[in-house]
Length: 255
Ligand SMILES: NC(=O)c1ccc[n+]([C@@H]2O[C@H](COP(=O)([O-])OP(=O)(O)OC[C@H]3O[C@@H](n4cnc5c(N)ncnc54)[C@H](O)[C@@H]3O)[C@@H](O)[C@H]2O)c1
Image (cartoon, rainbow, N blue to C red; front, side, top):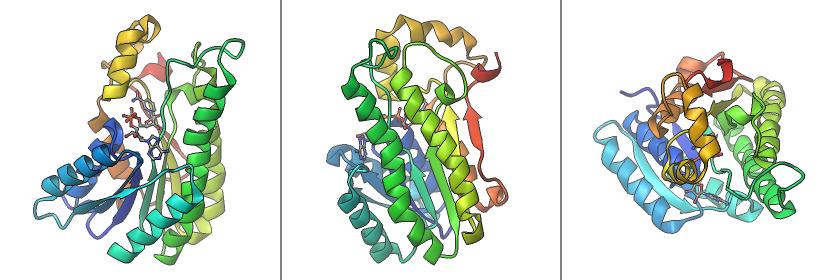
C-alpha cells in the first residue's frame, strides 16, 4: 500500500477493463486518479469504484469526459487535472483496442486501419503532447503507453492493430530518449490476450484467438495483471526503467 502516494495520474480509457482495474489499483496505492474516458457512464462508474477502493490510502479519483483523439478535449482534461490536484506525475495512455473488422492487409477495410491508427497511435501522440509539458512542470514522472504482444511477434489476422501497436512501441523508445533530460521515463506495456469484457467477447467470437490460449503458458491474463505492471511503472520503484516494452503475456512471446 502507498506505492503511489502523492502521485497524480491520468488514465485514458479508464472506464474499460484494463483501465478500470488500473484506476482502482492506483487509488488503492494512494494515487489521485483522473479517469479520462469517452463513455460517461463507464467513466463515472470507474471513478466511483476507485474512490471506494482508495480507503484511507490518500487516493482519490475523478472522471473527466475525454476523447483522446481530440486536442481540445485532451487539453481540457489536463487543465482540469491540474486545477483539481495541482500537478501531474503519471500519464497512462491506455485507450485503444482491436475489433473483429481487422484482418490481413488484402482484406482489412481502410476504415478499420484509420480507426485504430487514430485511437491507439494518434491518441497516444495527442495525450503525450498535452500531458508531458504538465509532467515536466511537476518535476518529472512516468508515461505508460499501451502496446501489445502483436507488436513483438507476428500474428495473422490483425494487420491494422499490429501497425498501430508497433507504432506505439517504437514511439515509446524515441520518447524515452527525448524526455529523459526532463526526468520523464517512458515505457509501454505489451499484454497478450487479457480478459476484459470487450476481449471476452472477441475470444468467444474468434476461434483463432481461442486457439492461441494453448500458447499462454499460465493461462489468459486478467486486467489486474496489467494494472499491477502499471503500478510498478508509475511508482518510484521503476525510477531507472525507461524505453522498455514490458511484456505481461503469460509467456506467449517466448513460446
Ligand atoms: N484486453 C486485451 O487482450 C489487450 C491486449 C493487448 C493490449 N490491449 C490494450 O489495452 C488497452 C485497454 O484494453 P481493454 O481490453 O481494457 O479495452 P476496453 O475496450 O475494455 O477499454 C477501452 C476503453 O477506452 C475507451 N475509449 C475508446 N475510445 C476512446 C477515446 N477516443 N477517448 C477516450 N477513451 C476511449 C472505451 O470507452 C473503453 O472504456 C487498449 O489499448 C488495448 O489495445 C488489450
